[in-house]
Length: 125
Image 1 (cartoon, one colour):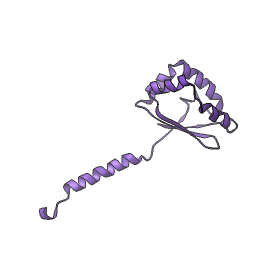
Image 2: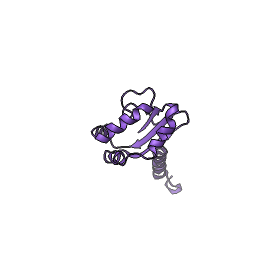
Image 3: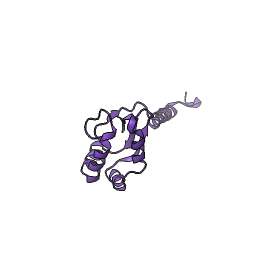
Image 4: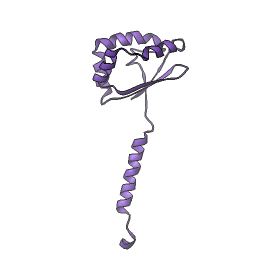
């Protein structure tokens, strides 16, 4: 899952500072509700790109929505974003994946395997 949000340019420094030390109970809640390999990337102009892996986005969001710490965290973070509809963890713009190296390498390996299995040897011609 990859998403985009816009941090207010005049709030970037504080936003970055708050994420340098996220509340321990928030970190645990994210982990326990299926948000894995979660990273945030911030451009100098405030474009924020987030990435995480989960078996189910709906289940991960529902799990977090049911936690008290998430309600507090989202309320504290909402003021940092421009053009936000809803809470930050639900109001982001989802980005479509258009390339994944491992998927294409796996497809290439599969084609190479098929080609090797069905290429006649010189004595089979």
